[in-house]
Length: 495
Image 1 (cartoon, rainbow, N blue to C red):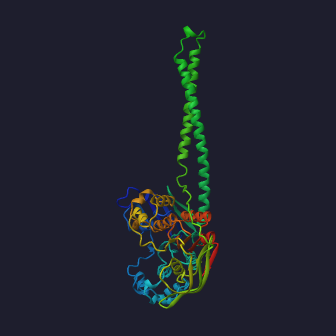
Image 2: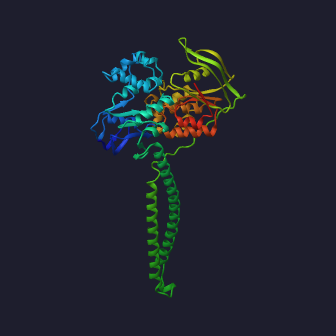
Image 3: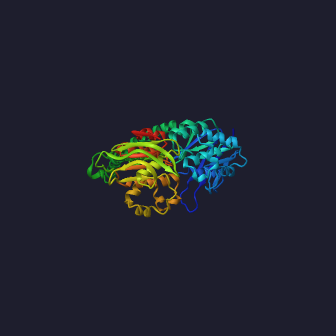
């Protein structure tokens, strides 16, 4: 066992006026299975790269371990997969790679195929197999579940649960619960370390948030009451003071002792007023220390269109073929009004292809596909690599209301400063939020979302869940987040 010490860490990107980290200090035990959570853009990936020494910073990071970062960057995806693995981990043992591929439920023949012919999920599994060759290093695992099917997530979670010594960035709640024993969260105002899994952390956070909200309401009432009391006491003091100053005992009053009595009363009222003001200031200061980490967001809204018939889409005995080979066969189902359909199955079984077929893409297929006439569809794609330019131009190009679009992004925790940046500089989660916000701006009869939660932070996932359960749009989606699938889908189709 050893410790990774972070002391007074401060970091900001060149040209930025805002620090990502500001005088942060904490320790990490290298035996921990540490989950890492926080809103998109808060600096999770940045912190991992600071551990790797990729950025200059002030403060100190000390560790007696070697770090290994995932995902690996593959610059030339036309290479044979085994050659890419060899570049990542030279002199790898063939039997060990095949063992890991077998554990990840992927055929060995991927080793002898071009990397770019593999599905996104297959590519992720291959790179994970390469990562697991480096078990003696402290692993920095950045969102490994993106594009992994539910079965593969279960396998990777069980694998990680058998290991020690890693930081895992993930937004999949079920996945985190299965494989971590500590959690670190980047909050709005600080960084917090806790023992436990995601569920215990989130339960503690909700309890703390509710306590602070309750205290805040009480202090608001106290401050109002004290303010009114201070004003009354101040008025009484001023009145007593004016009576003392304007008093002439030789002309208007037989009791010559009234002047010192009036002075004492004025002094007492002034003292009481100051005491009330002091208590009011203390209450204000106490209130200012609350709610700094409470994540507040307005509810998202959706305006789905009502289609004129009950059935929107019908597939009967559909098979989709690539180069004469079927990726899925004999598929049949209907999408009716109010259906929230989740397509599930292993990577490469044709889920995305079916969505594209419904969208009208030019695919080779057999069987019958009937899509309702004048059916308006809103689509969120898996891919975000094509996104670039500024948000204003993006809204114009996609014919959506810019004000509404940006308002939705604000609700999804976008800072206003992000609006001035190029979309290509956004984090993976922020790019996915751009696509979701675009979809929510579009009135549609049917929403087609292909792995919408990839890279999306946990709190935003919960927002999106609440949106879909409230407005109940007709939707067909592919999503491997088990919690999301269980809460949203009322129809599950397994390929």
